[in-house]
Length: 515
Image 1: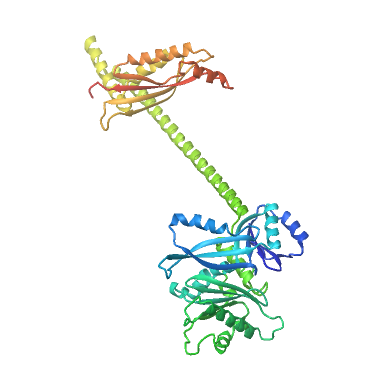
Image 2: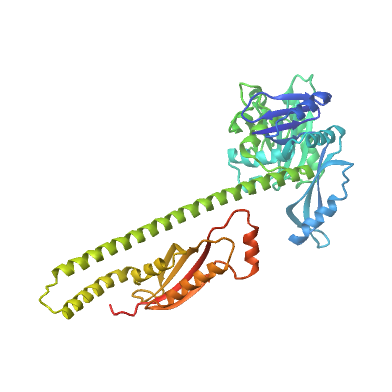
């Protein structure tokens, strides 16, 4: 779940996701705020929106640097702003460049500072003390910039070129407060928070007058060419106030009557809001504060300010996500291993079943041939016929596993201390290969802590295989123990008793009989 703490000069308002009830406090209610923060759920991720007058935003030119030099340059500039003077600082490159009169290439830097007001600094410290999970801190002017680029731009279908023209956006903050932000060349240049006289009888006229003052200030600062027209965008939910603004601006000379194509839009916050959780007709008039809260819950824009506590929380969240991802990978790996092991076991059972079936069929064929053979032939002919038949049947069996299964089984019968656990074979050459490689995984037992007998039994087992016909080589790949004291110490150090020792033998077989 997520929540938003909205900070103004008057107090704090908390908005929670999927709810419509808000919690509001005045800054004087320090005891209530402290109790609220201490009881705040530690599962809720919190974002801060700072909408105050103490925030100072300006731009300065710096020499153009290489990409790897920019970070260190900003850190040196940031060091000038002491933490005792400013609660939050933000410096970033704008990628807007120019060439100075002296021919030096320069790039524009944005500087945003929140004065170290006792109320805001104390509140940030209380959030860290209460261990509230603060993940993002937004600046209201730059949050409006994101809102304009994502909602207003798409609603009006503005082109990139249109965004580079001078535009003044006036948004309704509360019943009598308005914020004016000025765009030029796609950048925020000025943010101004004004409050109309509460006793005014004509708010529309007062608003147009404040807008006129803002445009006059922009022109006095030479932030745009002197002959440029300024486009106007008014954001509000009061239909009566929005109606007739165009004519009022024309009367005050903000819009030239000759240039009727001058950019002017009066937009309703409700029409721009996708999910109206707090910005709806049913709750209350939808001012900028409610619209920005719904915008954050819906679009999740990136935060603006940051401090050590925010970086620590983001690192913690990132570490938790990495940990969860690793656990998922381990789980998938375990499932993959289980599936592969199951398939291998099934294939082994199928191979064993085929061998057993071939043995039974072979015996039946031998018995059938013995019954068919006529005894009028002499004993030598009968013997030759039987041997020929057995060779043919043996040939069929060898075509499956490529070795004599009977002689191999007799070896296991002779070595009673050896137990076969797995047998794999493959052809060493492609297609009609006459060479095979067989890998035997087996156990030698019993093992009562003495090593002489297991070694002797395994060596005898290996030597016995070397006597089989067609065997080219027998290699003891993995011994039951290393024949040194190292493994002996390891086995003796184990807590559980060891009754048998595993070993692996690799055998190369050449099928020399003609097929």
